[in-house]
Length: 114
Length: 110
Image (cartoon, rainbow over all chains, first blue to last red; front, side, top):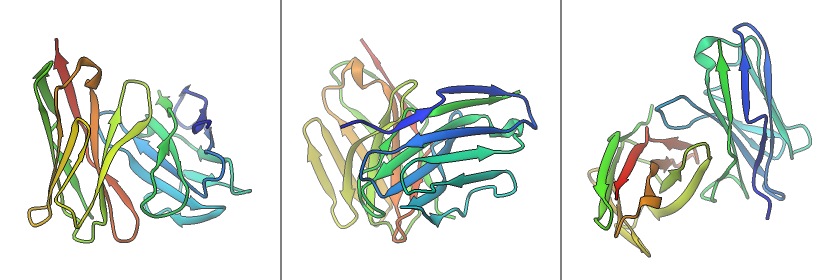
């Protein structure tokens, strides 16, 4: 079974630029998560989708971050404009459904904002 | 908001047991998880425990849960150099929200 795919793996941008990350979850997984992992910290949930609907986006900085999962499969996370403090690894995970189901994580995208 | 705390570092000798500790504040916790993260990789689920259990054993891994003190531990028996990684404790709340700890970096000395 193919795992969670993310691209790009690395991205370096200047502050005030925009950037987009892509995630392809495991086939058949209804729930998709985007996490932000700042160096030395644990992952922080940014947004959770159930199919193409948002379950939780309470910690998403909506003035600059947006995410979509239009067909309930792939998802994109965008930052516009980026700030220095957005430098982090952005992890995508998927699970069969919302609830106590195993989350499978992708390798992450490391973003550096200069 | 809810919080999950872990000590930052642990160093053990190969063959010894490792014990990684975690405390959490969530009173509505349903499941508690241990994840492993190796350099440049995502998180990998190691084991989990339901909140009404107090112990779970899975090969070299033993999870202990003290619900009264909101304390979770992961014991790795016969620790190997391949166990060197960052270990995250995570809490799944009653509203199915995951909260991760800060991670404990385990270094295994040969």
